[in-house]
Amino acid sequence: METVTWDLHVHTTISRCGKEGASVENILESAEKLGLKTIGFSDHCWASEIPGASPWHQGQDVEHVLQIKNMLPKDTGIRILVGCETECIGNSVVGLNRELAENFDFVWLPANHFHQRGFVVPPNLGEGGPKAVSELLYSRFLEAVELGFGTGIVHPFIPLGFLNWEEDIL
Image (cartoon, rainbow, N blue to C red; front, side, top):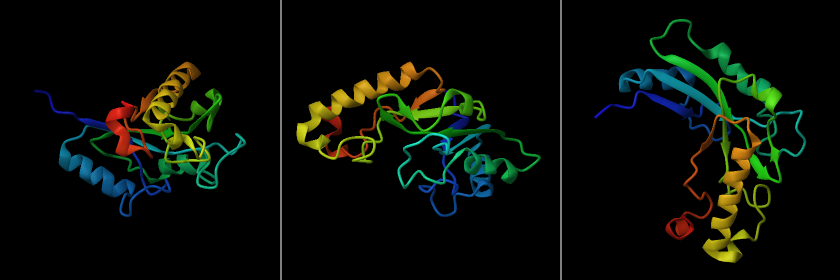
């Protein structure tokens, strides 16, 4: 059995969700101990040029995320990629566009940030039960794929905000 030697979904303290101690230095040290060969930093990003950011997303723009490049060591045995995780809120509204995406080595598109009620999903989504959540999850997944500029869909099978219905939704 082969060992996984990469992780391309790593948030640092640059993201508001980044855990205390999730500095570039600490992450690379842990990655080396684990034998990882490639790390992809993917902090949350909503470009300041794109209107409609939630208060949580504001300030986590392209320039903010790219500051990580100044934190990277010059020499390391680990391949380092700088990407981002943007936001998809439906109706083709995304926190990044194709041109701005070119600033990154990769771009993750989430189709399931349903914990952001009133922003990513209507506040009453849960009233429709697991079936309504499942249908929206599926349509958002297809929409994210059809955007055509993301590298991949991140955590596609986790119905965030509705984990108590996870089996029914999936």
